[in-house]
Image 1 (cartoon, rainbow, N blue to C red):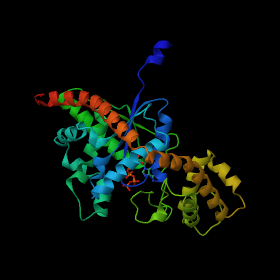
Image 2: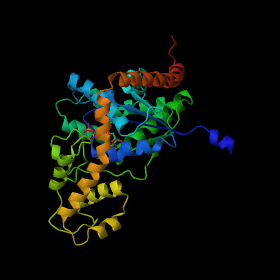
Image 3: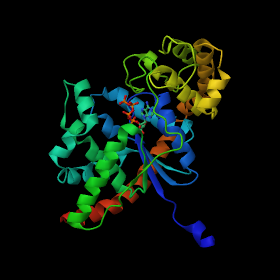
Image 4: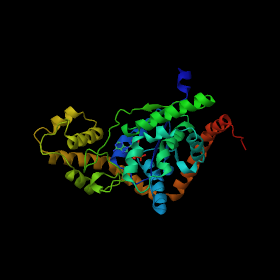
Length: 336
Ligand code: AQP
């Protein structure tokens, strides 16, 4: 029994881009689960600032958003005493492994990635090489830490598959170095859709602010956005194919309250969408209130945050260098 207790916890790794204040989608699909996983896993979470560079960023804004993103993770309950939290660009191994993996990544495989196709359509004036090799950088992020599991939303499944493929290929060619990570499908890993167009996922870089709830939105803003949320011309609160808007609101309400769809249908039987939207808005505003308060408090704690950046970087550097050193030896680089 004692021995079992002392077994190494499985490692979880995940990242989030500092491309804006996190949305309710990021929160429900990722961070809320990350918080819970801290109890059972050895977790590493990072702010993916290098990934953010694949889309043109305003430098001052990116710096601000990176600090803000780090503080937001803490405000959401990611505890630096339990988890490793760091900024990707502070750890050199990410960029170094990226190059070595790029030299083992095949053009054809990368061209099939749907995110590349989507993002190049969205940013047609800046289809850069980084956008193309994004999955390689992501593979390196995961493999450096020998992660057992990677929590992935539906949109990231293809990239995790790619990570597994490139790791297996590398291990086959050069010998065993990388652990092959598995997808971790959280119990509540819902995909949250845009409130303005429920066929599109909710995104922090959406140009229409009515499409997303930012986790720092004030309660009245949250209530208004839900009030305007696109639904359909019916009146029944039921989860059914074709009712994308209502399905999305039910998903959000279900995660916030822990109720099943059946229970929600019963609660709102005979009520119109207006009452339902109010309830969803209220539940979301209540859940986000403590996060907003904690974020405000952390905004005044510059030295504390700087200290955590340094501490996270140091630990991440130590872990990642172990893998990178093995990789360098395997491919024939002389160690300095
Ligand atoms: N709408 C969503 N529903 C559920 N999960 C979501 N995630 C993102 N949007 C939703 C999950 O959040 C984590 C971090 O995502 P990211 O910031 O690395 O990149 P992203 O998926 O591209 O998120 P955004 O908000 O859409 O950013 P932008 O607008 O910059 O592209 C991931 O685990 C993701 O699955």
